Length: 133
Image (cartoon, rainbow, N blue to C red; front, side, top):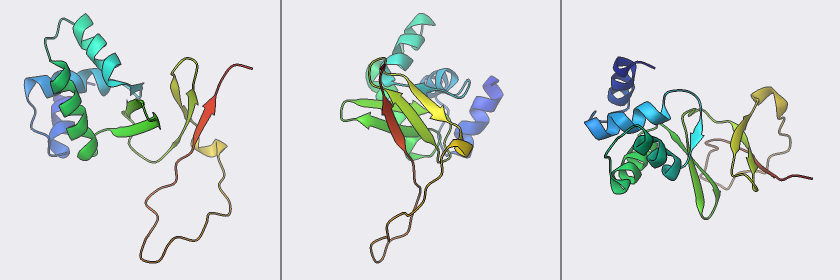
């Protein structure tokens, strides 16, 4: 994704393109992927960036709030940021910490429960936790 594409995506999601936000976006939005904040910080450091940890966390919160990335909570202490924002399902390897997409055509959901009065379904997303056998 070019720098201009990054700038356009930020603006489309009402995110002011500061230099730090652009750096985070270049790491996270370069391809479909799932990265934790720490992984993003590590990659930024490898690139010689001086973006602070607090700025990365604040930027990810803003990106998620504005729909630029999807936040995936796999357990109370692990959160990933997904550059693919439409509703989809995941495998989460509890041993390696790897989060991978499940092809949409591989999941069929039947018999969803009736929703509580006054609510509507926003999405249905499945997280399947896996480990070595």
